[in-house]
Image (cartoon, rainbow, N blue to C red):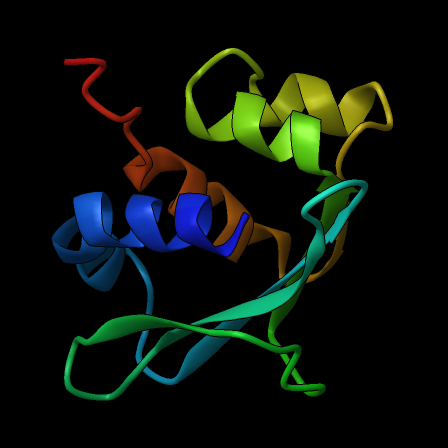
Length: 110
């Protein structure tokens, strides 16, 4: 699962850096096979990276199943609908999750 998150960051790094403010940390808690905890960090020099652990104090936290996260990344699950349906849980600054969601584009299937 870290590879899916890291791949999404690589594909969307420039857009994420432009959309997110400096020194922001967004944690991901994914349940199920292949799940775990990761943190997306937008640094002060516009770099965006994934850390293979939960850094504790974060600005926003997204929790969901691995399956729903993959659906979110490939466009089969709308973030707002997932939140309303209880499939995605958010804590902290929800506006950061909305900004991040606007930057994610699915992987090229080729």
